[in-house]
Each structure stands twice: as structure tokens, then as C-alpha cells.
Image (cartoon, rainbow, N blue to C red; front, side, top):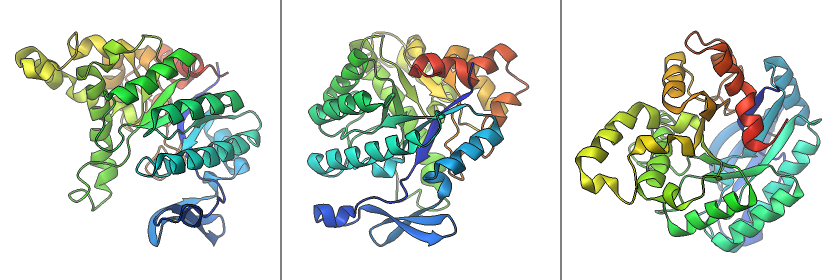
Length: 331
């Protein structure tokens, strides 16, 4: 069974000038600094430093070989989602980066698979782009956990997820556009605090908002970053559900009865947390995820799972590849 990393990101080495293309400011662009280094810019503002591992297939393959990873699933970095833009612009952007990602994977010697992005603010356009991308070679879709103020229990987003289930497209949910921006502006707290909270919010919204009850069980949906805070705080949610009727929302059962409806990745960086995650979710519902190639990701991919002293070898095999091979249909 191959070892599969389901959570990695990319930026193309270059892409069109989107500000010029659409006549609006603050679009992402890449400023190359030489020596395989670059800065992702948002208009005139620096957003994130990156290296050639974001766009160079040979660099990525060398890192795969170094870490003993057979296959990586690659998806856009969420800053490229463009959900806050006009839907026609977001569709154009999705097509640009989806095609660029297929080009990267084509250079990956069979070691990379693509997860597409879609203009999620427009359900019809999102469904059409998903269909186009899957036909072109993508193996699933990568979405954010909300669109503006709409969580994943929103009717339109449920419609999109139902389309994913109907067409057999696996879904990877990634936090983005984090809450509390003003209070988490320092020390990258938007990433260390906001992202886990956003991911938990996505899961809880689907449970209490009745999304899982409305969606077929054939939907394959996975939440990045170990599901955020969800596993650790499930007891709090469960207790609230049983003791306050307002908490129950539209859900037909308590939160713990929905654990077989979604999966999570292993990007949590702590053996104790991994043991809890496997205990709560079950060993069939956790897949290797690294957040490669970013500094906040696992620097030697697979080290946490392989080196765990708290989970068994059978569970390790499932997490390292068996679960992902079935979930995404890759081998």
C-alpha cells in the first residue's frame, strides 16, 4: 500500500496579472526573489514567503523520496479561492489554477494528484467547474469551510456537497478567512488559533445545521488539520446537545453519532493529540496530512505517525496510506 499525503499546497511559478485582468486591486501575485525564493503578494502587501517547493516538481519529488512518501495530493493555497470576488472572476481564477495544478502533476512522474478549486459562491458555476476539472484529471475538490457568513450548513453549499456525492468527488475542507482577525493579528495566531477554531466550526455547523442528515452517506468529506478543535471538545458539544434543546439545531442525533460521516487528516504535530484523534474518530477516519511545503506544516512528512508510541502498527498503516487510497481512489 503506498504512503499518501493528502494535504499539500502549491503556487504556480507564474500566473496572469489578475489585477490587470479584472481591473480590481489586491489580487495575489508572485514576486520572485531569486535562488528559488519568492514572496506571495496581495496587491502591495506581503502575504507569505515561499520556495521552489511550491512550484517545482523536481524539488517536490526529492522531498517525497527523502520522507518516504509515494503520492501526494496537491491543492491550491486558500488565498487563491477568491470567494469574496465576483463569481465570474472566481471561476476564471479557478480554471487558471486548476489547469496550472494539472501541469504540475503531469511533471510529477506519477507521484502527484490534483484537487481542484471551485467558485463556491456560485453553486451552479462551482458544480460545472468541478465536473470540468474531474474530467480533466483532478481526483477531488478542495474547498474553504465557509463563504463569507455562510457556513457549511447553508442550503447552497449543501447543494454543492450533494453534487460532490452524486458525482463521486471527494472533498477536502480547509479553514480560511479566519475569524477574529483583529485579535489574532500578532504572532500568526490566525493560523495557530483561528484555523483550528474555523475547522471545528465547519464540522459543528454540518452536524447541528442538519447538513449530514440531508446529505447522502456516500459523500466523502475530510477536514484538514485533524478537524481542528473538534475531537478535543466533542465532550463539551455532546454535553451541551443533551442539556440545552437550543443547541440541537436541526440535527437528528447527538454529535457523537456523526463521527462516521467525515474524516480528518493527521496534521496535528503531537503524539498525544494523535492518539486522542484516533480514539475519537477511529483508525479508519484519519489520513496522513502534512500541510507541505509551508513552515507550519510537518517538516519531515510522516514522522508523527511512524514514530507514534500510542497507536498500533495496523492503525499506522491505515493512516499512512490505506485510508487515503480508498477515499480518493488513488494508488
